[in-house]
Length: 116
Image 1 (cartoon, helix red, strand yellow):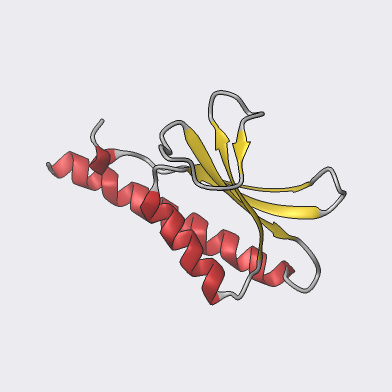
Image 2 (tube, rainbow, N blue to C red):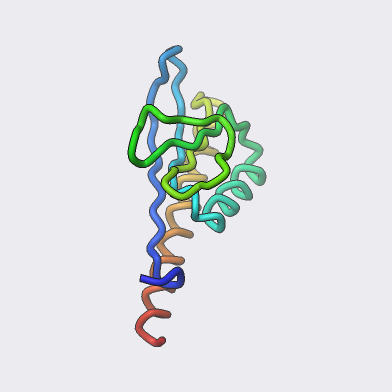
């Protein structure tokens, strides 16, 4: 499968970390620079403050960097936000916007693959 027909996946979860902080996490393939850029734009427009960014190995979940590794192949990008009542509506809106955008991009890539 070439880069044009690659399907993007974004995992959006809510969980608590070891310090009992309620977090909203967005996780995607670290090589999907367009997706990461779009997520960054949505975050900036909604004035959400990033709690932590991480690059987690796809093969060993205990390998996590707090900086972008030299080679991002084999890593997932994770952006975490503190989830509170003040930002609950913004996070719900961000989920909707990111999910719709990913769906549209994947549909357009499928159409492109059929017509190429």
